[in-house]
Length: 245
View 1 (cartoon, rainbow, N blue to C red):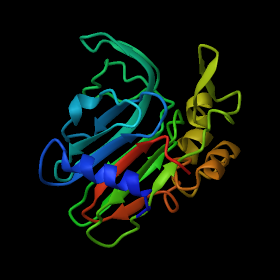
View 2 (cartoon, rainbow, N blue to C red):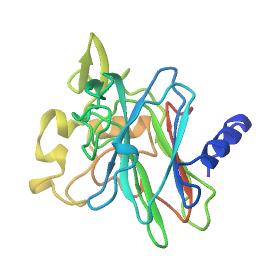
View 3 (cartoon, rainbow, N blue to C red):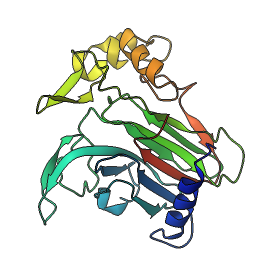
């Protein structure tokens, strides 16, 4: 478990106490950025949608959500969004194409993903750059109730600043995302498909190594399991946007 500065740890405990349900495990989303983030949430198949799939999160604010038993899904940051009173609109980065409330839809890559699967004896979680990168993100357990690699996973580096020209996504003259090589080039080698399918045939590339060097605890390509997937037991989870390194 990563250690927080004292004020942030106290802040998190207070936020968790006000979760949308008073018992069970929680997922707290905290915006440490200097700008607004619109989190998107997509459940795995057969799992319920949390918070209608998306909401606005102002700088320095958090929101805690009750986690249903055995829930599985992903969280990502949407940026530079404009919505009307009905929740209709779009985001310049990682838009879900469904308005403010993603309602089960996923984000349009590139998007930094926090992924979580709750299990009966062990949880699995990670931060993935397989769909590219648009903002620094971390996920970590709090109040772990058992054994496991209860550590922080994430990417605190600003990959938009170092994104190769062939991967960069721009809006209003600014780089707002860094695509994965699979998304940018679509080849079997980069997508781990065809003759490159499976962990024995799909190996790191210069592009995935760039992601991995910048963010060692995040998935950099499809079969980056050993150093990227973490486990814990019975914990609550905190997702932080713009985490400190």
